[in-house]
Image (tube, rainbow, N blue to C red; front, top):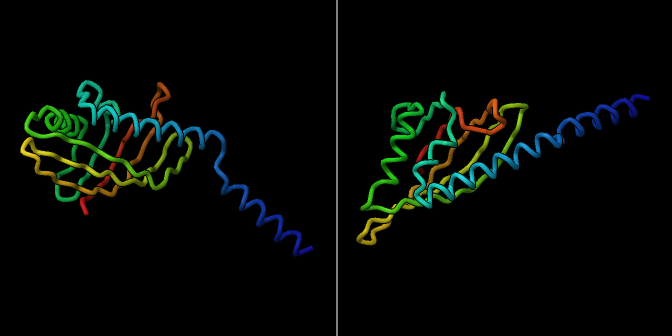
Length: 149
């Protein structure tokens, strides 16, 4: 009897650890959002560069003050508008955890900056992005923390 109770409890624990279909679908949508943003960034589409971030975003990058939506967008737009350099991001998603209308993404962005003279700088930036589902159903970053290795 005790063994059956233990097995039942163990089975419930395993089942509760399995993501729901809604969580799986949200994770897929978030991954598409991130890869789409990367493609837009790499194509220099400044008109869409701020779409990834919620209006109330707070962004922390080690060594820099916390940035709000305007500061994040200004920095990205300025970088992509710099005609003396080419900026490219590569994305490595480590994990996406979805909790209802919120999600946490553990990832690594690798930024490659090439000067027009051919000099190249690489910045490997592990981080954590917190997404929230917006009223229109899209997923946007509300908080992120990153640092350069």
